Length: 639
Image 1: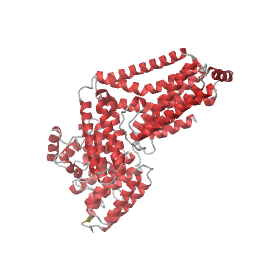
Image 2 (image 1 turned 90 degrees about the horizontal axis):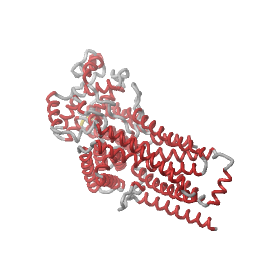
Image 3 (image 1 turned 180 degrees about the vertical axis):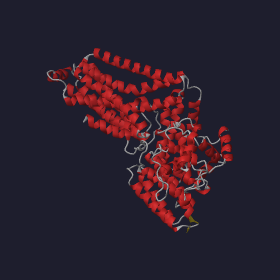
Image 4 (image 1 turned 60 degrees about the vertical axis):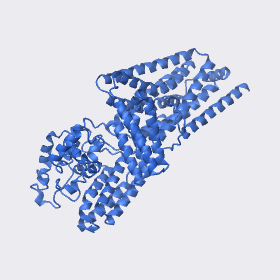
């Protein structure tokens, strides 16, 4: 049972829908194949259908075939909340192509479908490190120039012998619809039916270098120079918040952002080192995801809009909460509430004008939070306090449960259960660390999966703690405890009981570990120099404080009269069950798995109290059960 539970938790934490990062070279996944086909359609279709007339019947037939392949490929993808909506949009795309719709309409539909796939299946669309283009021209000359020409005009020495001819990277109409990621995908997968074969002998890093290099042929030196000046003046910062924004934007999309955005795009494609890290800013990610959510809602895609709104919180703002809380608690609370109000407005199908108003409020607060986090208050002292708060907040709940159970085992003379208790939390720490390593090196874990893991584990823990609390309270009576001890004196704890002890210990710790590591990663990124040392010191001091709290609880509880000890322990575990229940519901709501009915009620996270009807209702039910159970046991003792 214990091993089976471990397996279930591993599956929950990693998620069946995560995208493999892979090793070089890696075969493309179905989702990546669909993205590649969509990119091909968005670029090629406008060349062969103009004003409702087919210009090239053979190429048009291929576009129809590709549209069917896209739909079939998406059908084979793993289940996901948005898959039905994505399938519907794929069918819409196929219908547009068969109806010979306008090229710009087909291209924009294909690009929207690409974005939905990336969001739904968390597809990695960025290089692992910022590409160094120093040797990119040499790579291009060795692997591409023979066909595409040294100047990227498709007139290389081998071009005359190829049918169809190689692509000209200077064709403005085609390259207008190409992103760096699309070029990388083509280099990786090739183009079926052409001489463009997959470059599987090149490393991922080399393929990204080539993608950035060939993306520059479509722009001029004058445009790049203008873009460099605009970037230095602070223009384009909202459009290019991070590497994902850079590699997924096309020149046509850039022009819709503003006059100089296309120039900035041209410059950044030639100098990606302007992004010193592929680590995206959580606040910038939230703002981008919220904007995409609003766009989806305006376009009538409420399901995608809601999922993007959830992602904006769990993948972005939530990771900054600890650092922001230590600087401006009120701002953190207002921002969290505004993002929830935006999600609820979408979930409830409110008018577009109301959703836009909610978006403006949330976006403004996110900008305020970003400014607050960017202030030079991230001193070693602030970093130390943030680090200390994180470890104390996340660890205290687990320590209370572990200390109570350890004291119980010592008081009852069942020290043979202590190795199982300690084994449970040690395995939880190791598994949490392993999960994090796997998530950063192999699998891209989404914040939604993390919240689901925490929510499910918290609810299971609440049920177990409620049972333990009643069990302890039922033995607070000295006579009943004496009878229990006599029945157990000649034998050690049963194997089933030992596994139960280990399971409670494991669950109490595991639910905190993964979130704690994520918070520390975000804090580490926000800190520099001596502040990072302060983060480590805060973690160490917090761990010492938690150990001291555990020692005090265990030490003082040993000195309590037996009946009083059981009553206090049972009350503590019952309280923790109520806290865990509220936190579990809140986590599932943050992951978008449960509806939220907001209440005008203060949020008290330390007690698991959040202003939602669902969470408070469950907590009230548990409190009622606890009181009823207490009265029932009390009546039984009197009789």
